[in-house]
Image (cartoon, rainbow, N blue to C red; front, side, top):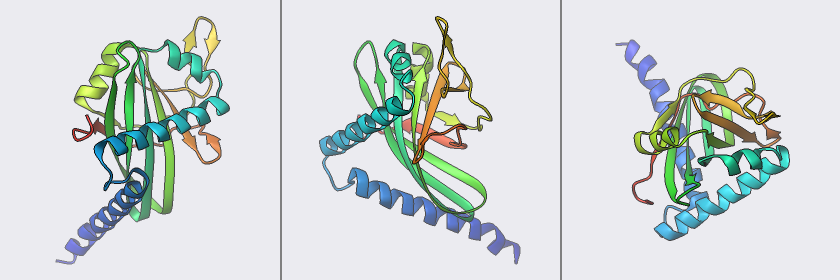
Length: 196
C-alpha cells in the first residue's frame, strides 16, 4: 500500500502544474473571451513571436516565405520536483490557401526540476504533405535535438533552424533569444475544434 502514494504523488503534482499552466494561458488568451477575440489574441501573439524570430535570425523570413506553410506556438509550463507540464496555443499558416488552422499543444516533462518556463516555437514545413499530416493527424515531438541542423536551400545555410522530424524545421525562442537546442520534448500538437 505504500507504493500508491509514490505513484500518485508525481501524477498529482503534474496535474497541478498543468492546471496552473492552463490558468496562465487563460489570462493571456482569455478563455472568457469570444472565439473571435481568442483568435485575434493568438494571431497577435504569433505576430510578435515572428517579429522576435526575424530579429534574432533574419534569414528565417526567407525560409518561411518559401515554405508551403509554417506554425507558431506559445507555451507556458511549470515543473514541481519530478513532474511538470505545460500548455500552449498557436496556429498553422498555409501559404497557398492563406488558411489558418488554430491548434493547441500539451507538454509533459519528466525528471527533477522546479520552476516556471515559457517559450515559443516556430515550425517550418518543407512540403505540403507533412503540413497536412501535422494539422489533421496531430503530431508529437518526442525527442530533443542535440545540435542545430542546417537546412541547405540554394546554397544558403539557415543556422538556428533545427531539423526535428522529416521535413519539419524548428526555431525555439526563449527570453534570451534563439535557443541553441530544442527542448520541447514530449509535446503533443492537435487541432482546436472550438476555434476552427
